Image (cartoon, rainbow, N blue to C red; front, side):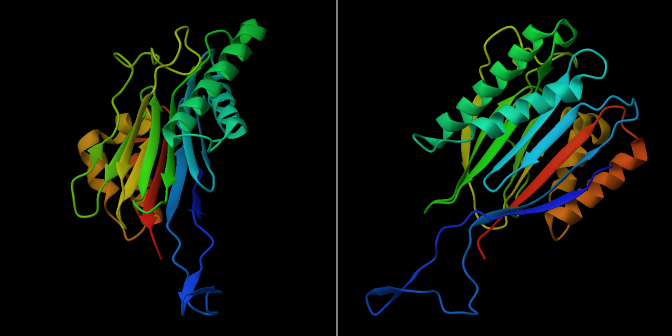
Length: 254
């Protein structure tokens, strides 16, 4: 098992107004910093073929679940995420377009690798990206391809799915990264309030825990790390065959 707790700092350069002028923030006072506090990990499947990978950066969280020849699933996922990191949001236009561009870069990288080496033919991967826009009206932008899932857990409310699965009968994702057809990702946004959580999971979590129990656990615990620990307990009880990756991010402003 891997268990990683990461705090993502999404902040601006804080200043305060004093008698009509901008002044340095007084030493010792807490600085308001809208950000995501995230905890994530991969529960390794019992079949012994790693397939999942995830990345948590300052403003970006990405999760991928690869498939291909035996032993190459994680290669597909790693290729996809490497391309996402290399492309990175350019902030030259709408954030949604930036994230979709990251998905297209991942698709090209996986397709190119499959075309160069016959051993890698058939590589395909899911991809879920989320990014915080911490402006005056904080929101989360997301891109989704494949059979993973992104859930929005508004504080005090029932978790709601933001995405739909792009696979049939448990087969490879027909709209996945690296598939023969050009990717057509789901792209969207959701408003955030302090205390809201956003959860990204691969299908291994869904299969191991089930949607009803999984969504119950999304809101437990005083922190994303505590929530992740509970999810790990549930997965340990069933020993999933496939890798099961979950990243839980909570929006905070202080």
